[in-house]
Image 1 (cartoon, rainbow, N blue to C red):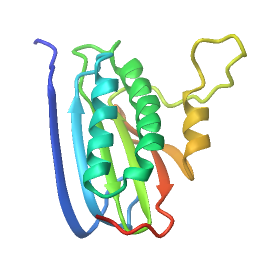
Image 2 (tube, one colour; image 1 turned 90 degrees about the horizontal axis):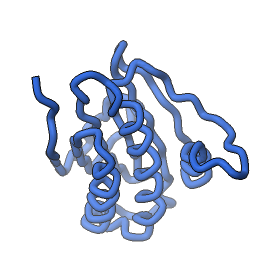
Image 3 (cartoon, helix red, strand yellow; image 1 turned 120 degrees about the vertical axis):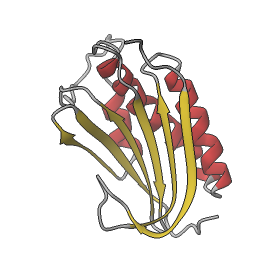
Image 4 (cartoon, one colour; image 1 turned 90 degrees about the vertical axis):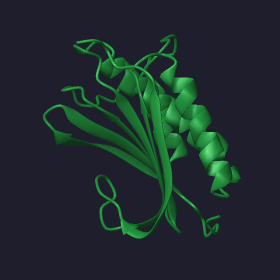
Length: 162
């Protein structure tokens, strides 16, 4: 079996559609899904996708913080997945409601997220600290033995959608 590569993106309006996963019960009005191979090039692709989608949704002011959060979450998903057999794809999902933007990074690693405190001279280990600083809340959830989502939520502060 060969490793999957490439991307697949879907962006759609979802009027009043209840979301599944990390934010069950919220009414989301916009959704975007991007599937990527777990390669280093996935990070800039996901970041660029996020910026373009948020511009289309009228959330331009959030694009910079969202892009940084996406970079950190997708980097973690790539790192968790690149070592797995057959390199299963990772995914980015963006969900926007009247009140919030939710950024989700999905992977198929059996390992849970382990936040850690980086030493001052460490080259990595600060990603989730950055996510926590830029988002209103974040968490991870295992949705199966080999499937997890790490998500971050940013409040829209009464900004109208699109």
